[in-house]
Image (cartoon, rainbow, N blue to C red; front, side, top):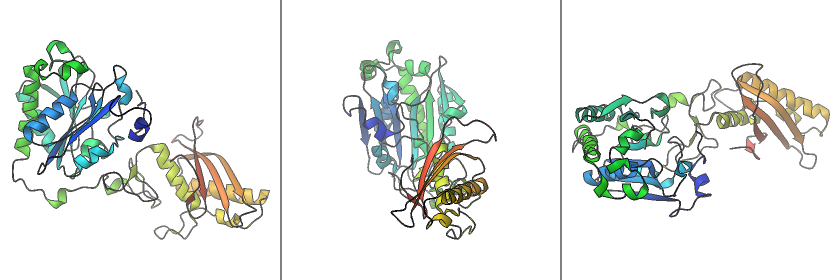
Length: 372
């Protein structure tokens, strides 16, 4: 099921902090790790309580985004790779390890374990299994391996994601009651709650004993460099693409895109707006729309621009489908050409395209509009 809101600014524009949702955090001096629950409160109960208990008991950092609504809290769910509420980045900025607590569906009491921190993940799996809990490798949609997953947005680029099934979470409270009033009452917790939390904390203490050094080689960027280079030399040939123009995200790292449509729009802007010879790494990269810059607004200018855009896109973005090109040569602004291109992504030539994204550019890379 798709998220109602694409990111936190979108959610915040439609929901009220303190009424519909709550943000809680603690930054602990000297703490090397953090327990976080970005789908806490009534979204995926009782992940806030588990993260809070483990963090406070072990004196580590804590963060939770909590749904407070009387119903419909799933609408507050923002997927882990797009969760960008700023407070969580302040918590993770000093964290060397992260445990992200989530809730999954399911009638079997099981934990799906994922994330890029396999060392800590293996230790948690062993401790939970020894305590009598069932642990399974997470399916692909829950594996938490994306570099942009909030569990991995710490100093080392590695975290653990715990997805606890509905049945397992219900076993942590008397009568399986996971309503807001019930999970807020610590006296309603069962022994299973504390046994589970203790196993996770023991695994962390074992993996991160006091005095464990952190090699500088363990510090990683948000995205592996191998995923951000295309055959054209333009950033972005994999599942992560550097956002252009260059900018930093809320954590002070290089901002990136993960949405395939937005990545295509960004690459298309670069292709259309770059004059061949401008890009040193690949002098042939770009399109020749500049040939129409000083022409009057006539059919010949439009034809030059159309041909230049199609030829350039066919060479540098062969998987893109161009469904429309609308050039405008401005007679009142000599030397200015606005170009709007409708582009879509398909790996199947000849397939009908149902949805397109618009690219608005002027030569030289100046963006005058678009969908990013």
